[in-house]
Figure 1: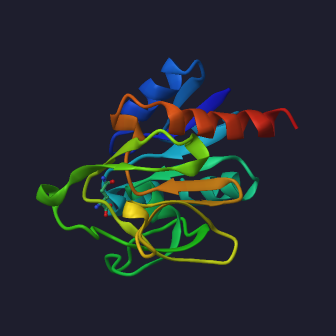
Figure 2: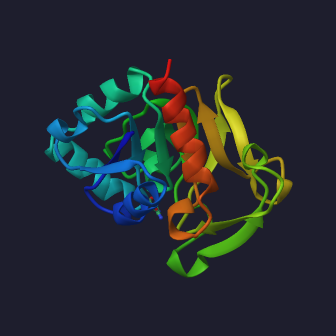
Length: 198
Ligand code: GLN
């Protein structure tokens, strides 16, 4: 199992470490050729404006869109989720997006770096045990299309959507790669294994 991790900016090393720890191969993706043979892809957290500009610079936008359209499992965390969203409530003017997921995101929904926080949440697909989620200048998902499944909400509230799935694409506004809880990465690898074994 080869998992590509977009490695232009942000915390791609933490995702690679988690993937390697779980026994799969992590491939740092900086150029289109690095996507050859990857079974799944992670878009890390960082700064979505910077990652978007670098994606354009390194001609990765269309190859990434093609990989997503082919049905390969793709997971965006935080800035990665903003890049996947079709709409943002407050994107920077001209901010490049992959725009492959039928959601709207609100950037920096909780405020600045100083307002970053951790919270125990429940993610039903990962079991009943509480999940400690880390929010770092996190966005919120402010609107979802009809084919999007909400995987988790903050405080069980109706409005605060923090994890979503649309077919082969998943997104979390928080950062599973900066904790020791491997459940979310295992869920993602299972998605990739199912697809490889079809
Ligand atoms: N606020 C950042 C952005 O808009 C995302 C922060 C993160 O990925 N931790 O891109």
